[in-house]
Length: 208
Image 1: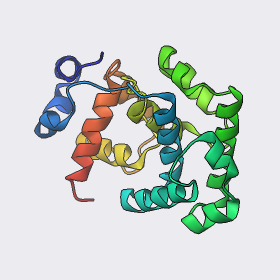
Image 2 (image 1 turned 135 degrees about the horizontal axis):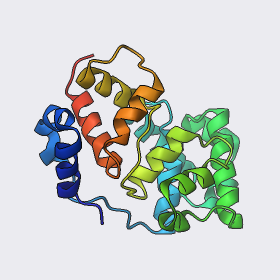
Image 3 (image 1 turned 90 degrees about the vertical axis):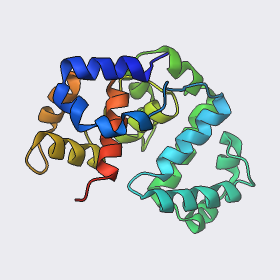
């Protein structure tokens, strides 16, 4: 199981600047990344990830609650498929997100997508499986891998919070090229998930 102590030792060795810049937040991270979720929990997590696309935390949480209510209190492939698009629109979902949730539900119910099996393949393979589903792009896949599966080596070069934090820490120009971000993040492997968590913590406490 990936542990924080191992990640911090790695950062201190390969990127002392990053280690020092994020040191104030080291103690705020979990000691280990947890991926011990059931299929049902993973499905609910993926639904939550889709809902949170391009939304702030408070708005996403509110819509998630309304979507769950529209599904009669249980988020399952069956309840997602049975709920009407009108009910989901009333809950605050866009047409695209409704289509994505329906596509996920169909894939999970048919066995085309086995969320539990994603624990046993590489991060790249898991992301590729997720992105076969309509509406699931790199960001959604990366968030799911980090927060639902607890995969240790995930970095999302398209996440605005991570981009801004890296620009601040490394003195990069605004909207730095993706290649620059990936080159820096490569040093953090195989602990890029912990690095991402530290970047978000740094971003949360830094004024834009």
